[in-house]
Amino acid sequence: MKVDLIIQNAHILTMEGKGVGYIENSSIAIKGNLIQEIGNADDIKRNYKADRIIDATNKLVVPGFIDAHIHTGIAIFRGVAQDMSNWMQKGLWPFMKHLKPEESVKGSMVNIIEGIKSGTTTFCDYDGRMDLIVENYKKIGARARIAELVNEIPDNVGDIPVGELYPFNPSIGNAKLKRNLEIFEKHHGSENGRITAILGPHGPDLMSLELLNEIKEYGEKLDTKLHMHVAQGDREVDQMMKRYGKRSVDFLEEHGFLNKRLIAVHLTEATNEETKRIARSGAGMVYCAGSIGIIDGLVPPVYHFSQSGGIACLGSDQAPGNNCNNMINEMKFAAILNKVKLADPRVFNATMALRMATIEAAKVMGIDHEVGSIRKGKKADMIIINLQDPSFFPIYTKPIRNIVPNLVYSARGHEVETSIIDGQIIMENREILTIDETTAISEAQKAADQIAIRAEKDILKAESDILTMVNEELL
Image 1 (cartoon, rainbow, N blue to C red):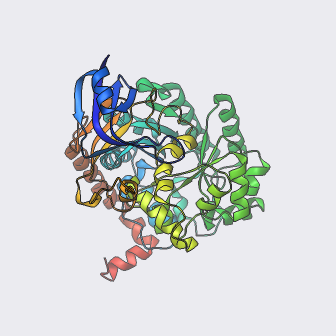
Image 2: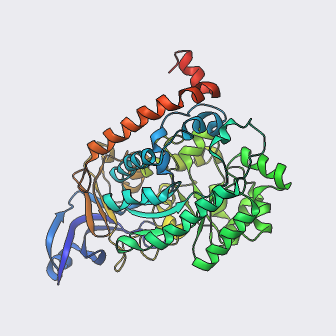
Image 3: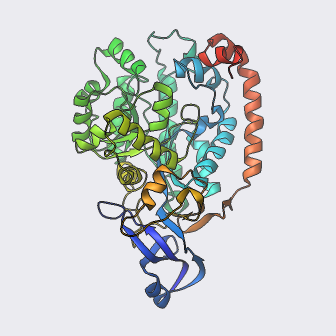
C-alpha cells in the first residue's frame, strides 16, 4: 500500500493503555494527516511504500506534547515579573495596559516557535485578541484549541489598590464574548480541523454572574468546554468573599459550573475537600507547575485531584510568570515539586508526568479521539527525539527501561529534532520549515522595545519588587 511517510526503526511511546505503550524497533506509516499503521519495522517495510522515509534508528517517537494552558499573547513580557509579590497588579499590569494587539501577535509567534522547538504540537491558547493570534497557528502549522479570554475588567485595573474590588464593565465583557463566539463561526474546524475553539471565561472573580451564566448557556448550546481559572490565588478568593461571601468552588457549584464542560485551571487555593468535589464532578484540571511555583511558591493539589478520580494534565501558562514554555521542563517541575510536597519519591512518577503532557491532556481538552496517543486512525501529530544526545545517555531497554525517566528528568527540549503535525513535517533537523524564525524574533523584539518606552512611567509608579532589585543593582 502507498502512504506518504514512513518513520522506521524507532523506539515508540504510543501512550496507549495504562502506561506509556513502549514498543521497540517499530515503524509508523502515515497517509495524509492520519496514522495508517504502527507495527514491526519489517512488516511495515514489506506492506507499505512511501514517498518519504525517515530512518529513526536510535531515536524516540512520542505523541506531540499538548500544552493545555498557555497565554501566548503576553509572551512579549517574559521575565518582567519574577521573584516578587503582587505579580499581576505590580508586575504584569503596568506593561499590559500599553500592549497593542499587533504587538501581542508578534510576541505570540515567538512563543509558539519556542513550544514547537521543545516538542509541543497542540497549543490550548487562552488569551485576548485570539481572533488575531489564530493566524499565527495557521501560518506555522501547529494544532490549536483556542479561547478568547473573556472578562469585564478595564485596562487600568492595575491602578486599583491591592485588595479593593475590581470594577466590572459590561460593555467590555460583551465585546470579548462576541469575539469568542465569532472565533467559533470563523475558525472552529478550520485548517483541515487543526484549529478548534472553546469558550474562555477568565475566572469567577473577573466578571459578573450574569456574564458567567451567559457563557454557560453558550457552552451548552455549542456543546463545548469552558476553559477557566478557578481558585487560582488568594487574590481571587479575597475578591469572591468580598463580592459574594463565598469561595470560588462553592460559588461555581451553586451556579452549575462543576461538570464535564469545565476545564479548571490551577486550583492553587482549593482545599482538599474542594479539590475532591471538582474531581468527582467530571471537570478536568490543568496544573501549571512552573508558573505557580515561580509566581506563588505553591504546589496546587493536582496529585489529590488525580487520586480523587479526576483527570488532570499540564500547561506551561505564560512567559511573564513561568518564563519557560517548554513541556519537558513542565513535566520535570510537576514531578519533582509533588515529590517534595508529599515527601515521597515514589509519587508523581515520570510516566504520570508524561501522560499528563499527552493523552491525559487530550482527554481534559476533549480531543483524545484525535490526538494524545499514537494509534491507527488518529491524527499524525508526533515528534522525533534524538536518543544519542548526552542527556539521554545511557539507554537501557533490558532488564529495565530508562527512556521515560530520562525524557522527564534529564531532557531539556533541544533533543526534539522533528515535529510532525497533522501529517506535515513542520520542523526538521530543528529548523522550522513554515516561517522565518529569525525574522519573527527580530520583529517581536522591536515591539518589546517600544512597549518599554510607553510603559516606563507606570512601571516606575508600581514600585514592584523587581524594580527595587534593579535599582539596588541586584539584576
